[in-house]
Length: 187
Image: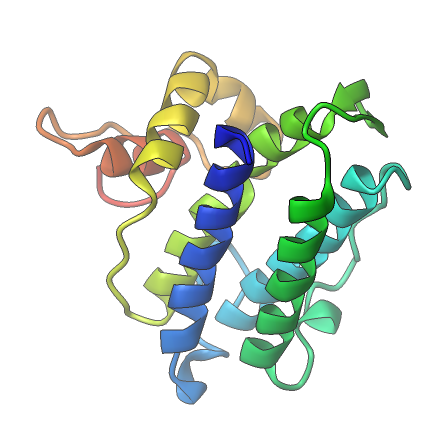
């Protein structure tokens, strides 16, 4: 298993850790994602994994669901657990060097996973915030994403999927700097 694949699986495991600690009464709590609850964020993550599964299995891009709640299911923690089991199997079977079709043309499975890791990484933090839980994000994934996002933070905000960057404190950790670049946290 290569480094990118291992990183992606660790980040999914990090989401699983957060999901396993979300109290039942926090699924409808507001999240840092505007107009979304904890359940919306989890549904978005589940749907996102289905999109990644379509890409890495060669089925091509799949449009996101309009309503992420539909993907969360009636037992969200169980839905996530089933999703990660499925993804673990697909990722373990995938050849990182395989070329697949994406919205950005033909790319390798490794490129798909390397690019897509930002979603579960950041949304693990969003879930933790909504559930009032502490979370330490995967350090290597944070460092990798920080190196990519730092020079292009404005482009991420321009997509409308991320808030404008916030200033980070001088002594901010890499996790705090990454979150600030994506308009989250206190810097």
